[in-house]
Length: 238
Image (tube, rainbow, N blue to C red; front, side):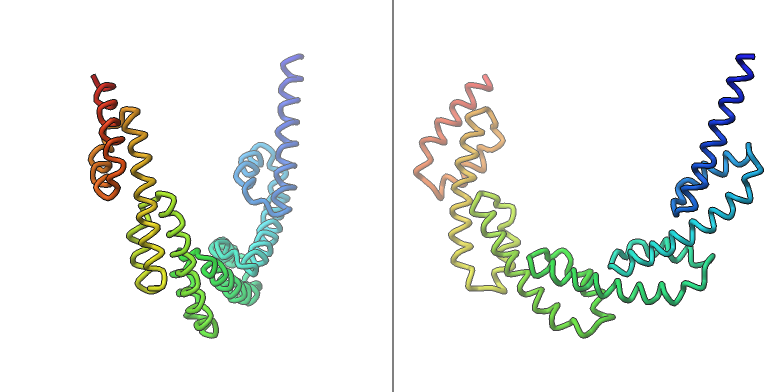
């Protein structure tokens, strides 16, 4: 008796789960389809309802994808195109959404590039092939963005982030008015790097000795401190 009640209770729970999945699918959540199809094998009376829910949900998902694409979220395009096979009546609307979305995306890229986020330049160049009216604006944004990028690099270099030196030197060729500022930033950054290296060498990091010696030639006032740091480092090794 207890076992029968348990089985009936389990079946009721599974049936309830299937009903919930069908409801969610109908609302446009296709991620529940696989689970629902497995459960429908146990409760075949729901198969027609599930099929109807899948079609309704796919149409809602397509409508949602089109709305997102129109706002410039173009990564939904592939999903929308797959669903379009089931709902060809949305073809024109999807095409319009893609065109509108691409233009909005291009506008965003231009704004981001102006702020120095030059990693978006290639993406913007691809889209401007379809929207030639933005070519001049994109060119200006690229120039503005590269100048901001150079300013950001100079600030980072000044703080001791010498990783950006080579990139900054290339950019400075396009903006020669920054050459003197970049030169000063490199010297300041190198001194900060030397100070950090000396501190780390004192803690036992012998890997930095070679670089520190090279930098110390530019800043002889640190030679004595570096010498002491190397001695302390060797003592720690021993």
